[in-house]
Length: 160
Image (cartoon, rainbow, N blue to C red; front, top):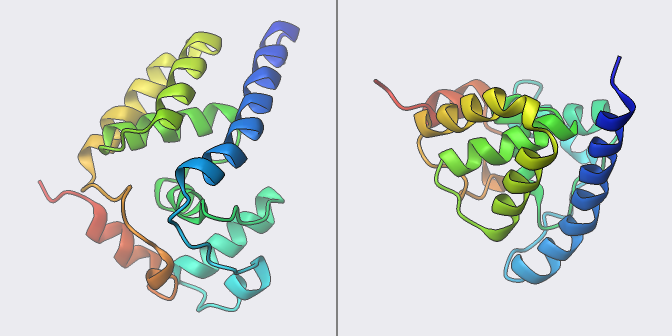
């Protein structure tokens, strides 16, 4: 059972994320076109595809796709991180390890490390995992929505 203090820290981070995300999309993703797709349209993709898995993920998490942040939602599918606060922070560590350098990622990493230091080993492991993948943080996943998710994951892994 989570301590009250930990619940408060998670609540603070959650509020911070929900406040920053719309501002990040508005001011830092101006040039990005949003996909204009909903869960129903995504679930109409072939069952093994990235699009279908994205629709399932959004349905399971009870979320809608975030305009101009659709690629971020795809990162969840590719990396298997949930939308829980701990995993959102780990995903930013992963992306930082993968080469993404932006103010939003840095703010999440710093605030998450300060407010949830007990998860630092998990975060560091996520950073190292991100370094093992070919850089994909800059890709536009919309053209890949009908592509088999296993093929996408296989092609994003570094071959050692």
